[in-house]
Image (tube, rainbow, N blue to C red; front, side):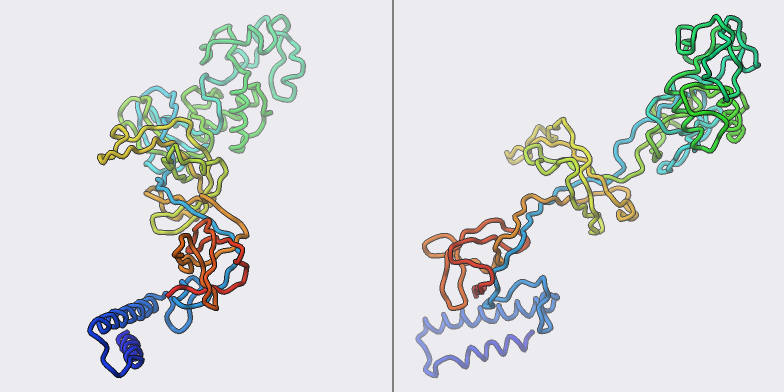
Length: 432
């Protein structure tokens, strides 16, 4: 670097006239020499930093002062960044209906899927199944039907609904399934009761769908809990280490939309089951952005964004939801300096490739989105613009003329230009 600066100074000195100039001119010349030294030193420093050293400029290096660059036709994209938070979403309480004492809890961060044990209550497992309906009643056969004897007054012909399912024909005289005689108290009745247990409904189909997905057979997935279903339940209960009753208790299972990630427990071993005994989230990482309510036009469902992780890695994201309720900023909307901060709306961004997010589970991230984009416009490096004496901007051509231009979008170190004298491919000079 020192050698380069010396040569530049010698070159300027060699061009000076032999007669000493007046004192004022000498000072002005000294300033010019100093400026030349600073420019050359800056170029050398840029080379040392990998911005264009070694005699060849990289593709992303800015053009040097005095060089000629072409006017090119390109697409300019303005990108804006906002802060966000990486995580798994809001923690929700699991709807546990079991009553008793908590005897086992999983570790926070554990992933559970269909058929997995969520916790143990009175040393009985509570199992995760998939579905939208909550578990709100016991599911099983009426006690009379389990013994193979039809209750008195039941119709002998069920219309073929139980054909091939191992159920006994019902005597005539009782209401059809689904009628008034088929509706009972949620949770069923005890042994010896004459009222049949509720065995039909969408919750039955939801449970049988899960039972089949776990590999149990011998029944048809429909809205009727049959003897074949009860036998499959007994085999499932044997696997879980439960008494083989053939009846699923209201507290035996918990339904969720899919795989869950267990959050921090709201209770300890030995305590009674409560409303917040166990919390959960989804298993997919996502980003939540508090977007300005006045500048959230970019937040459209399905819009593509880029998420920059804490280590600087960039991954693809997509807006999956936008909140409908704005939240006022903390502190009454002021920042202490008199400026009022705008209200915000929550924007949730999903990460398409979860593996690309690496090991990160939570932390601050940056979400980058496209603010404006112009396609196939003429552009030059921003450094090629010159301020004209009469106002506005211009470009210096290769032969030293100046042409007036109108500027448009600034993005990625370039600027959109237009004017009657500007054409694609023409060379313009970077001002010194």
